[in-house]
Amino acid sequence: MKEVYGIVINCSKYKDYDAIIDILTEDNVFPIWVRGAYKPNSKYSNYLPIFTRGKFEVYQGGYKYFKLRDAAIDNNLLAFHNDNYSLLYYSMMEELFKKTYSPDITNRFYSLLNESLNEINNHVDLSTVTLAYIANLIKIIGYGINVDQYEDAFGLDFSNGRLVSKNNFNEEATISLDKSEVEIIYKLFKFSQNDFILEPHNAKTNNHLIEILCNFIAYYNSIEIDSLTYLKYLENTLIMG
Image (tube, rainbow, N blue to C red):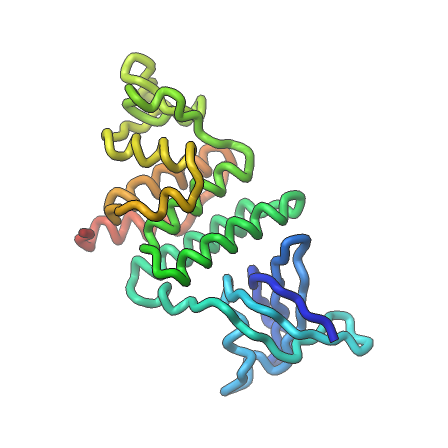
């Protein structure tokens, strides 16, 4: 018997009713065979959702994969099912993780997910958690944003990855920001995630910055972020506070 503590980052169907879940730990990704996961009323179905975190008890017994015996889950994903926006944040975090994850820095991705899940467990606003998550993702995949000129900044220059003043504004590569957005970008890339999330935030402003930072990742990674389309749809059809 072996115990594995970590976070589910992938789930795929295996044979007729079984599943293989990939558990992200501090050191690596650990695949586990879950027998009968898709059978009606299976207790294992609660262990399949992406970002489920806990202690997984497994055994090998001559099989190709370690098999799940039981698990003790220590986080609650119900916050993601409150409304359309909550589900959007969940899908966006999942998509960005899958499209940027690198096994070379497993420990940094694990720390980021772990911290974000702790914030969700502590009932931090999901738009704030998602915005901080994306900013920290930008840091760990090696891009970052230079915020040294934040005091007179007028926008974010994608081509140079920095806040710029009006005098250095490049219309082809710079996104305009208002004063409050500049301040948030500065805090996101200057201070720790814990400091940022404790402050009051506006969901509409958060969503605008989420869109900008997702586009920043897409700009450098040459990827499409599908959940951005849904974010724009919600922003055009729903009224945010």
